[in-house]
Amino acid sequence: MQPPTGPGYSPHRPAMAPVSDPSSFSSFSRCTTKHLNLTYHVDFDSHVLKGRVALTVEVLEDKFTSLTLDTKDLKISSVTANGQSAKFSLGDKHRFKGSPLEIMLPFELSRGQHVIVEVAYETSPRAFALQWLTPTQTAGKKHPYLFSQCQATHCRTMVPCQDTPSVKHTYYAQVSVPKELVVVMSALRDGQEVDPQECNRIIYRFRQPVPMPSYLIAIVVGALESREIGPRSRVWSEKEYVDQAAFEFSETESMLKTAESLAGPYVWGQYDVLVLPPSFPYGGMENPCLTFATPTLLVRNTNMVIAHEISHSWTGNLVTNKTWEHFWLNEGHTVYLERMIGRCLESEQFRQFKAMGGWKELQESVNTFGKNNPLTNLVPNLDEVDTDEAFSSVPYEKGFALLYHLEELLGGPEVFMAFVKSYIQLFAYSSVTTEEWKNYLYTYFKDKVDVLKKVDWNGWMHTPGMPPVTPKYDTTMADACISLCQRWVKVSYVKTYTHTYTQAPTLTLPLTHVKRMQEVYDLNSIKNSEIRFRWLRVCVRAHLEEAVPMALKMATEQGRMKFTRPLFKEVYNWDKFRDLAIKTFVENRSAMHPVTAMLVAKDLKVDKSQSTGL
Image (tube, rainbow, N blue to C red; front, side, top):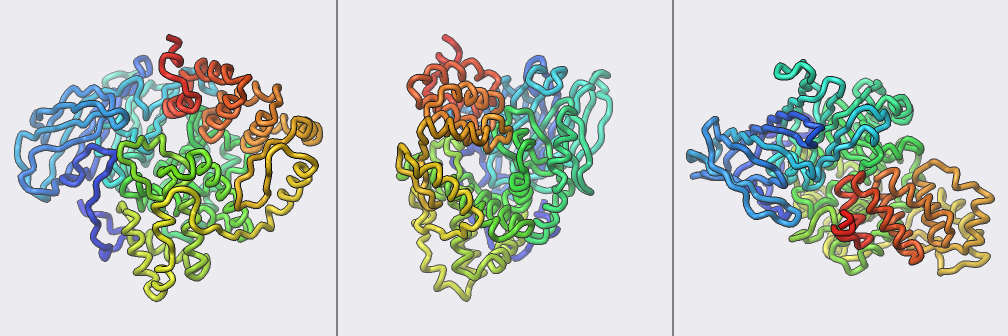
């Protein structure tokens, strides 16, 4: 199957260099998956997916007799190749990459031929991609709920596949669930019918005709309802939240049109938003046709989060990082496009204000990891590195800072956005490396190569810590905030504090100041998650004891890692309440998303024996 010839496709794309992926066992240099056909039976009693997947694989070499797929904690029952039984074996289990599934074909194939490899299997109740919620963990309290989160390398826990962003494929799916539940996926809905095997179950069908990487496969099963919010958009959630969600996401079509004006046609057909239960670990996830969103967005301005996920429809989903070492190509460009949408809908000063906040987030990530930590490189080496442990704002904000720096050097936002659009059109439907991006940058700006040669590429790409250039943002929209902040800190302060965005403040206000702020602003009553999170961190740092239960409550009543991890760490860092932080985590661990639980355990230095009560 050739790449699509639709919008954005170019037959003049430069040849792609072969690469290896340190996060995958799969033999994608020897063969590549073109299509997946998934069949699932969702078992809420056992917390497993009983599945079958047929992979249409194109052979890339002669005398081809075997292939390797990524798996993790899967129970494989049989494998066939073009309907014939095939021998298979699972290799040794790696700490985080799982086990390679080696498949020996009963025949030999030549370059360019195709084979359909079918695997029957069952997932583990502990599959990292899946979180199974009991009825009491849902808003409706009556029905169970299932959702997936495959990025970066967890698709292999729910599908045996070439689990690397180097490979893109279309997919079909049919999913059998109890009749009172609804299924949605990262694909177009394609009808439903009563399960002919069990009349109390329904089969939902899906198709994704646009090639995409495995990490974008997504499934949700629950008591879902939807509301139309635009000509190509619906919002999905449990009925308790669906009307509020429809109101919050009512500007989706406006943002889609703005993104199209900047980046080109939207090729995915439908753009729906699904509001997940509170344990979802991220702010959003750009699954094609179905953006996942945290419910913490329902009490704050959602615009930029949805603008970010919409932007991924071009940068990430259409043009994808070839391996996770090049993750900044996904996220840096997406933040750039997101802020250009903000510029169109609001103002250039608004974009500058958001960029200032992003620079501060980058400083906090560098401080957390350590300024000499190689994981703060824009292009890190991920050999034997778990991608979950490497996750931070570095690829987002260091990536944006590089693109903003290039924008300033090369002619301003209109000139550089034209390059980004051209880059998207040229590399649409493919996966790219930093080197391929950089080569095209030099080709596009061939009249400004002398300017590009002065860029400290090694300092930007392969050096840890903050970027080699500090941006000078317009502080107009921040000045009022900075002025009020200064009034609070200049009376007396505990640690040195600077208000400039070029330095990361470590603000520890005196306890008297924090109590006075509560009297003046009544910040304890604020429901906005972003404000409440920041306020509780200030309170705990100031050793306001009554803030500790509020901080731990927020850390556990929702599971967004942006909030949960720092709140647990703030309480843990106060010696008096360290044991309470650990105790609270251990008591709530089973209700957390597997990735969140794993990373909070590391933050609090909790081993498995503590977390299981042994």
